[in-house]
Length: 232
Ligand code: CA
Image (cartoon, rainbow, N blue to C red; front, side, top):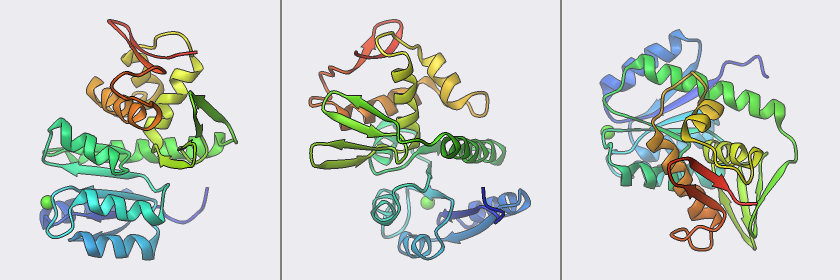
């Protein structure tokens, strides 16, 4: 842990939201930077190395997905939380595919967002303390739990914190189904209340990266009426 204040970068074009979030996070003790378009946001991320990025999807010019992809080119680890007015499944999945770690849909309360950000920081700290060279094997893929990245042959893919954390829970119960409620408890605890759909979206991402045929998974299985299971 460093004594420096944690830095949050907000990339959002709605001035009222930027002002509200800047006040709230500053009050909480975070250092806040903000950019009102994607290009400036990417430049600021590269320059200031924030500890967390809050990213709006609908931005003028470069959109949030592109911003996410650009940031991931030089920083594979910084947690990115997407803010989106679009609650549609496809947008959320696309955001997670682009390298985001979590999302909050507008309208949201500042309290909810603060809780989510605090929880993200807490989990990052726990993960860093626990960080080992542990790897989880899924078929031909190897997932490095230190960097949350998967290696499949010569291909490297970023899973992000939450997808990796869900995989870890499944691995701890390998061969047995784990209910979505148990996954929620293990990964999110009482901090935030993402829905079961959130878990389904991360499972889709895990399958997309780790399964040869994501539509016919052989490793990350759905057990009807019970939950998800990592095959032995
Ligand atoms: Ca916007």
